[in-house]
Length: 55
Image 1 (cartoon, one colour):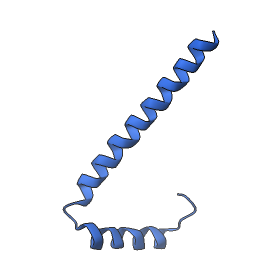
Image 2: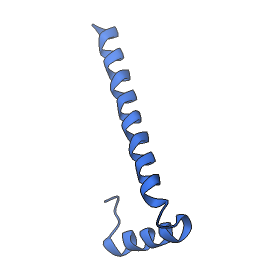
Image 3: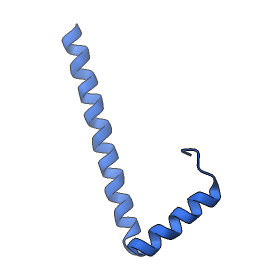
Image 4: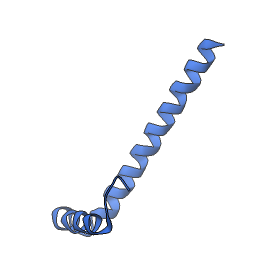
């Protein structure tokens, strides 16, 4: 995963919990997931628009 080993992932998780708090982490995960989904949909629409223009 991005060239990170498990020790690095654990350290990042601990730092995130310390910074944001355990109650805020699931909310941030949801927002990140929605953002990634919207980004992927935008890329697909752009690809579809490019393909329709080339035809």
